[in-house]
Length: 375
Image 1: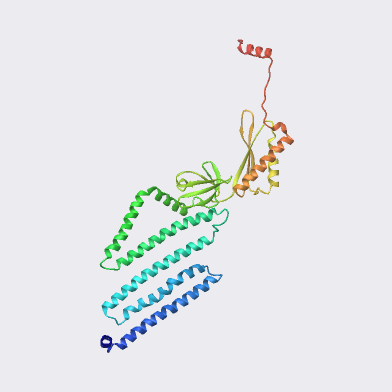
Image 2: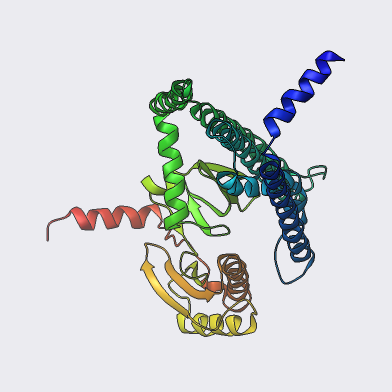
């Protein structure tokens, strides 16, 4: 009982004449906390309405993820704004502000982590990883898992270093952590120069765009379309459904054909080899007739020319235009089939033939004697 009485007397002696200041300080702290809570409720009420509306693209996952850290962050921020005006001793005020700074760093780190995880959840939710052929979903899930882990480690390291640097006596430890991370980054950079060059090549392709998704290209003699572009490799879907995985550096260091770089329109050719007796004008007019009947021709370009005269045959080149490469392929196959059928049915003598002249033995001897005898 005597000890309790002494403690009460000490408290009374400390608070005599300071009750008004203490009450004022408590009132200001309480007002700041209420202001922070009110701001939190207003802010997230607006965000929830925006996320539920149709005119504003804000996912509800973000709002739900940010609620927990924001519930503490906004009142803490209000207290930090109020702290300099509190009537507290200098030492107590410094300790209070330092404590608030540590809490602020921790809550901001928590907020960044939740936003990062929310972004991951939103992206993964667009892909069904349990589907039968979930190649794309599995690839996205794998990439995101690795990237998120790296981001979280970096965020936590920066947060811990920032907290340690806020203490004067152990600031060197925080600096050494950041310096060690920088040195480690330099070492890794030297050890992975080729990988870094590949990453830079991927960024260059993303900026300059020599290729784009669904571009029609010819790479290493293979015709296909660009299916996927990453920072390190490009997947080309070959016409027979094979996939060619090509390093991104290939598209910067070597030549390739891009049939849809500025336009999808393309010219197709069909070569025919016919006998010298073939009626070229009739074949030309028949080509125009076939093109006009076809729905694959875009009515822009057509022609038929004799491009070569060989030892036994004439080479005819049929030129025709189409809206894109797949349509051009189908049009060429259609025209080739119809022209061959026309030659077989109408003028079979125009098909390639090998001529031979057979001489009897007497005729051959007389011919040789005539060539060898003097004039």
